[in-house]
Amino acid sequence: MTIHHDKPTRRRVAEPVQVYLRPDEKDRLDRLTARLDTTKSDVLRRGLEALELQISDPEHHPVLKIIGMVSLPDDPGFDIAREHDEYLAATEIASWSDHPPEPRKPPKPHTV
Image 1 (cartoon, rainbow, N blue to C red):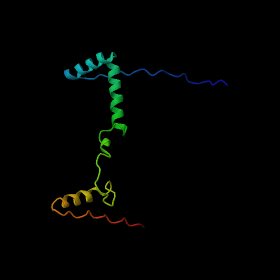
Image 2: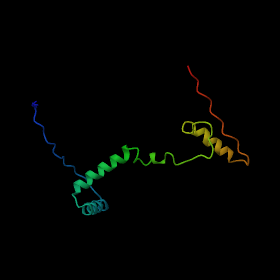
Image 3: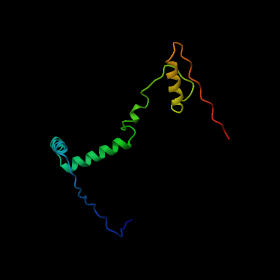
Image 4: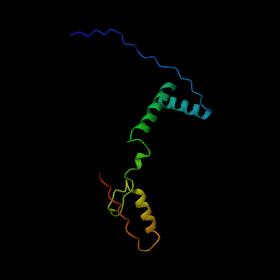
């Protein structure tokens, strides 16, 4: 079976972009170009790709890397992710005395 295309496929041409760099940024670009043995355009393209990956991929997002870093000595009996204000308030109040009170469990949501 032969497939015929009505429109010829066009090759996309790179679009020129003008960027103003401070002297230290220009030096960094020159160092990366030499170190990677590539062109300035390639360094900038790779930088854009790395930045996009960093802000869009949860595995690389700096804020999302903190998930799971904190462990609790005891189970408070409720979901701290949802009731974090309650937990932090109870923990702070508990730090004021020698015999800390247990954090209160939040009320169960009403169902309709």
